[in-house]
Length: 321
Ligand code: HEM
Image 1 (cartoon, protein in one colour):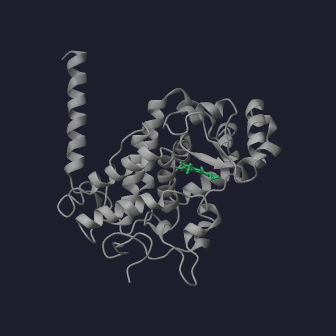
Image 2 (spheres, protein in one colour; image 1 turned 135 degrees about the vertical axis):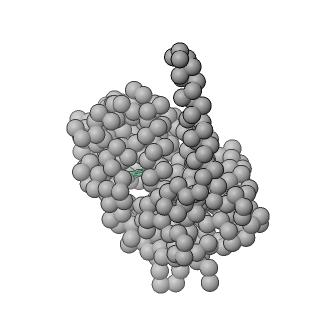
Image 3 (cartoon, protein in one colour; image 1 turned 30 degrees about the vertical axis):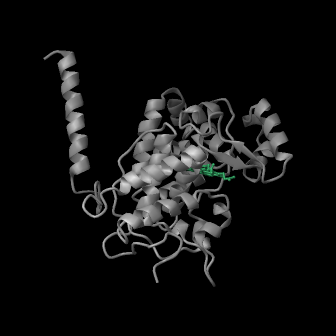
C-alpha cells in the first residue's frame, strides 16, 4: 500500500470514527451527542442562528460568551448557575466581584426564548450556554468541537461560591494550577484554556498592578500605551491582544514578547512550569486549537447535573417555581 493510500485510508477512518461518535449514545458520563435529536432537533441550529446574529451586530460578544461558559463551569459546575439573577436575601454569582464585567446574558435569553418557542421545557440553559460558547469561538475563526449535551440546570447561585473557584488575575502560576486542578483540569488544560484571552478585553482595574510592579516582564511600549489607557480610570479597557475579535495564537505570541495584559497571562511565560507550552502554542496555532478543543471538552463536563438532579429552567434567569 502506498503512503498516499494509507493516508487516505486513515482520513476515512478518522471521519468514520467522528461520525460514529456523533451518532452514538452516551459519550461523557450521561451526556451524549445528538441528545435533543428526537425532542428538539433544531436546538443547535437555533443557537447558531441567534449567536450569529448577535456577533454580526457586536463581534466583541464572542469573548463574552466564552467567558460566561467558563465562569459557569468553574462555580458549581456547568449548570447555568451564573445566569441566575439575585433575589431577595440572595446575592447570586453574577453579582460577585469577579463576575461584574460578564456580558452576553441577553444573547442567552434570546436563544432560550427561541428554543422554548420550538420545544418548551426541553433544552437546559447549561446546554444553551455550552453551545453558544462553542459557536462564538467558531464564528471568531477558532476551532469547532462537538458538545455532548444533557446537562441540567442548577438551583443554587451564591456570590460567595465564586471566591475560591474563579482564578484572580495575579502573578502566581502555582495558585492558577491549583484552581484548575480543583476542577480536574491539568496544567496543560490551564495554559490552553487561558488562550481564551485571544478574545476580548480587560479593565484597567485588573491590569494596573502589572504596570506598577512588573516592569521587567512588561514590554516598554505596551507599558506606555497601557499607562495612558489607565489615565481614564479603572473602568478604561484594553484588548488582550492585537486581534481581539479573532480567535488565533497571537495571544501566546504576545506573551513571548512580554506583552501579556494580565499578570496571570504573563506569568504563564515567566514560569518554568508553563513557559514551554506557551512557546509551543505561539509557534504552532493548530496545536493550540487542538489543545483548546480538548480543554473545552473537559471543562464542559465539570460537576454536571444529570438524570434526576437539577431542572430544565424555563427562563435562564430564575429557577422554576
Ligand atoms: C487562567 C486564569 C484566568 C484568569 C486569572 C482570568 C482573568 C480574567 C480577567 C481579569 C478578565 C478581564 C475582566 C475585565 O476586566 O473585564 C478576563 C477576561 C476574559 N476571560 Fe479570563 N481568566 C482566566 C482564564 C480564562 C479562561 C479559561 C477563559 C476561557 C476559556 C477565559 C476567557 C476570557 C475572555 C474571553 C475574556 C474577555 C471577556 C470580554 O471581553 O467580555 N479566561 N479574564
